[in-house]
Image (tube, rainbow, N blue to C red):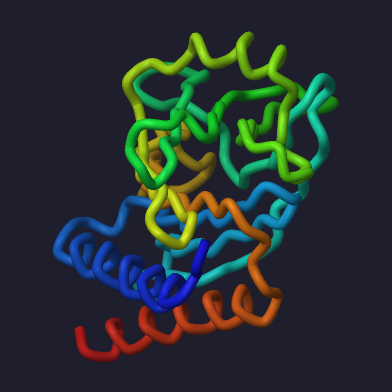
Length: 213
């Protein structure tokens, strides 16, 4: 699929979301999460600090690992609690709006002494991507197609946003217990230079907005 204009659209999408939140109390972490079917994952975080400017900007890479039996798992920078649940499925349709292309599972897992949020990516494609699953695995998870859905655009990108209750930050006198997360699920491998441009562009737009406020 063509990916023309994807990065421009994503940067503008993030900027619009930040502008919409500007009038509200600075108590919410904002994240943009970008993942694909081959283990490439990154995030940008706009976090309201205890003292200082309205937002502190951070970014990083999401670690990933194959799932036993098929699929790909990304470790998120927050735990999951969506709509009162610590486990939620998201179904992604192909660009035709009919074909069930991918499934995403948000869940919490225990790693050592900590609990971390993970994003499990399952693809119904057969082109050799790391997230591709066998027909048997797909048939075992497709029953979780529960009404939360997204549809890929012409560039093979599906967008989804949600609120996640993290329970607050210990020691923060002005706790921000909610994460507002914007996800970009990419059916193709993003170019490294394009990912770098996305992170830099998102931060630049936010800095401009803060200067004008």
